[in-house]
Image (cartoon, rainbow, N blue to C red):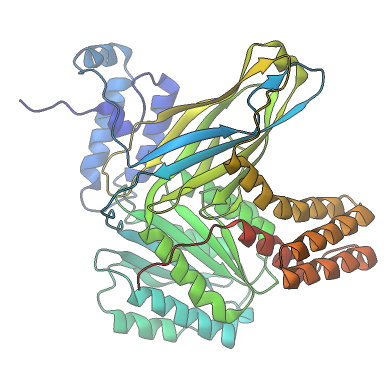
Length: 491
């Protein structure tokens, strides 16, 4: 007897999913798998299964008959586990707003044998505008060649270049003839202005040609300049990429690029942005990114239903790839690595009216996991953040993992606050906070970064602004202090 297909697993929803959740899951899958967009081998059959699953589950009568044929639900055995930690054992009944920190940890299960690295579908989107001349261009070409040489036969690779127009230098393919592809990269010459959307769209198109649940689909953008007038188009494209499970990472070279824009662009997909101060570091950053792909176990999205009066005021990924996250109903949290947990710190502001209840639910939602190598999605895992309300505060100290995360994040948030104060015209206050940051950095032995913070305090006081270079050095320098020490990887 042939087992019936699990339509819920095919769509990646629970058996209790609402019609809206089923429709949304089908729409996301159809975008990713439709034969008009995706011609990868075997994906047409998967799309037909998705269509059949939707036609059954979206029809109440057919769904009821189908549910009656299902065996008891057995939760899948997953290669990771999650824990939720709170900064306080309970909330207190009071007439003032309260702050609560919640840390979500998604950790890999310890295994003696490593899971094979998933196949890749990666597009390098490279800025070749006039500003990328001389050493920058040489280093960029060498870095692209280096990562291409390290690709495996099962990896799909493409290279897109852009200035005020985009060109597909290497179409998405298995890089069999690497010598020929290297010569194409070496011929690359800088020219034109910077329009990121042109390159991003071309890179997205190359990824879409081979998009698959069984691969890591990712765009790596490298640029040294501002894009003008197409920022919203880029953000919209990033949202479309996120809906299809395509990640975007951004690397800014030098001091001229817009860090706020690249942060926003990457974070929409669970990616992050990096600051490359010296051209010689381009290769190190690219190789490090590909090593992260090789260690990726799963990609995680948090679908949230929030409680009015309990505001999620801040969300930050403290590891493995640090960075702020957008405060949306669907948050792409990022990757779980084989040797490193995914840690997200949330800050909540809780209104006094909620503490009249006996228990406050801050968040009710699902964790949606995409595990490369599996042909179907893992059913969503229900998750809830909640705290009991009492008349007095509990005496237990915060868990060490919360204390450590807050301690690491403090310096980064100090520079964040100073940037906000400068934007609001509070220059004296911003300069004071940069001096405080310098003192804290000195106490941690970060002399060079402390010196930069003091220089920026003077710039704010005299020029009423940060310098472009100093602003990035402090922002990404304090962010780097949050990052855990990476385990040494085998050569």
